[in-house]
Image 1 (cartoon, one colour):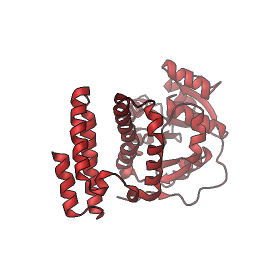
Image 2 (cartoon, rainbow, N blue to C red):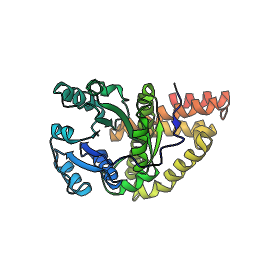
Image 3 (cartoon, rainbow, N blue to C red):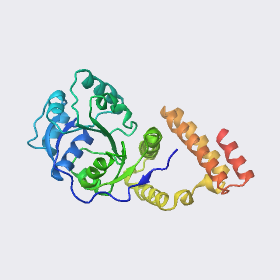
Image 4 (cartoon, helix red, strand yellow):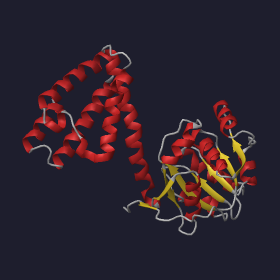
Length: 306
């Protein structure tokens, strides 16, 4: 597996102004469209079907016409495909079958999972295929435009055309990072594991705290979570604290017993399952780093297995 490498230099001269079409006005598409418009590009059309998408398009892309997908492809020098990962192959294929793609047209998708191979049907028609993926979550509001300034994008594509993706990323205020075609699925799994599962375990913790009467549990736990994340980003696994890392197996056993009882009462088996799986993973990683001795590791695992 190749290591993702930061772009050392990007052409500092601004690329020519481009006519860009946005498919579709979801949270990502609308925000990136607004960022590209802010950079001076012309947004020639946006595809928005749902009421939420139409409202988002009106707010972030005022004055941009809402068009059908074939109309957008016909009018655009650059087509930004901001659709769900699983919808992307069928969309690209379908447009290829109707000969909608144009020779020389630049097709850019925002899927984290896919590289540029998914764009082969368009490339066979003479289009240029690129992949960019912003490593952040989107609200679909204007505040995302500010967040882009402290964001990195995974960019993938043929070497000859990578500068296009790099330049557009820089224009949006973000940093381009090259990720190899074959590494895209693993890259995306890493991001999903960190961000999506963080939301899940936070929600589980809030549920427990609320059930025992902690008022405003989100406010209560916020300093702990922010400090843990900041410390982890700054120091990696050296920031690990808690009963597993200390080898406090009796505390871990108590946690397991209490959570099992709670899960039965509240029909929340997912909480116990997540705690046990993550505690075991933590113990293994702590043991491999020699934070836990052989005896401590065995005691922790026995406590978790019950």
